[in-house]
Image 1 (cartoon, one colour):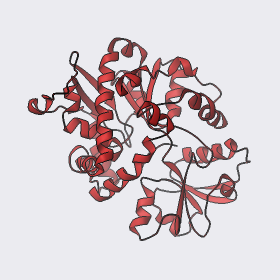
Image 2 (cartoon, one colour):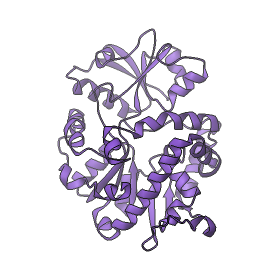
Image 3 (cartoon, helix red, strand yellow):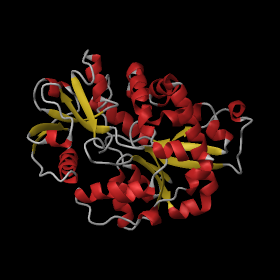
Length: 355
């Protein structure tokens, strides 16, 4: 249920970690030039700085943010943005917001946010970038996993012990007795091709591309089913802030979200723009493949949309869905305590940003 792709190609683990640590040590400031900031659509009501922690390395996952930075749309709204990358050996966004290092968290897996709230952190959830999870199970045509029942009896590859827990939760959420063999492994789908497992934990924006590059055809040679399709509903990349900060900076957050949403709309119109900025500017230290970033960007766009976003705008969270099937899935995963939805969810900021 987390969104951690493997180390980008062309960068070994040590170099990758060194790059991450170097970037994590200092903020990355996205400020447009004065000329570009002089946007006629400016609605700034007092300049302010927003510090944000990314859920992963600066890749296509933040394409809309890169476009808004590059084109001066944050600056036009009176918002100076400082961002810190995520990735291996870096604190997760929940830790960074809790410590006061940043004020705006972008956490891939909702569970750490909700558990932190139960432990006493007064966070407010203001949106979710993805309406459902791009993660799920990848399988080949010889032993396809197309439904929850198809998981039974399978050897399932996964890079972390957390993935085993996710698989078990998917069984329980469907009323099935967990019946699978977890095979620890990496994120390279070659292990699946080599027969080390019958399926693997994978992302539609990552491992499926690797198989396409090998000449395999989706829904013919291989299949990917998201966790939502396998009966484990969820949001992905929760956006959250401390309540005390929100009380004093609501307008600043509205303006930030308005600019980022504008960036995501432009990214949908021209996916190459966000992919190029990720590979060649904001994520240039991570040896990202521009072609792969473009394909990943194209594949992620549908996950930003739902019936709710069609009605209310991007990043919307449906209170009944979160407090109903999503909470039920988390309980199936062993969470006994969850915060009151009406207490922690505030869609008024997003409603203003999307107006």
